[in-house]
Image (cartoon, rainbow, N blue to C red):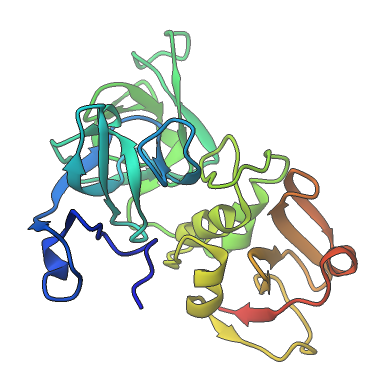
Length: 274
């Protein structure tokens, strides 16, 4: 059965690539859109009060299959295949192939290559940028604005210790569907950290439990980078005994003894190792 989170199909419209696989009134080709704001919110329905499913960061591609007259578009994220509704005004149909990505948790886009220029706007870890030129220690974005050059890395650059990327999220508030540098949920934090290490991962915890790494025995000694799964929740081992996770108990991203998490949630369902 097709997972509706990953299947761009409704009764009235579906992606052309699904013709013959699903029933729909019409099938349409994708129209690529690129995020032009810090983060575009992807919702389960075309409403500002609909549940947040995930976020699409600056420079990500969203394949659009439908739009309404209220300013909503419906489509599928290329990064992880997630399907949902977003605001049309957060995208541009002019695609700028990225050359770099943001390599720190949060950086600012300034209107000029000057740290005093106002007003700056934020970009988050893994935002994808096309750099046009450099000046005064800043890098010019192809869509306008300047970021501090030391905060970016080539688009294909990866880090050796992706858990160190996860550690940057410690202290951020917990937000269901959050993935940017202001608030995250458990799987959003893990997905973003893995991306810095060049490891693709699906969006939700249950998907990650099936796709990332390999299962290890529940009594195996744990190590840094092991992923620990409960039903609907994931965390990453910071050490053999410490768990790093965004969670609704603390309502933030924390590091705590794994034993404390087990005392609250019971034994993990699965442990996976890259």
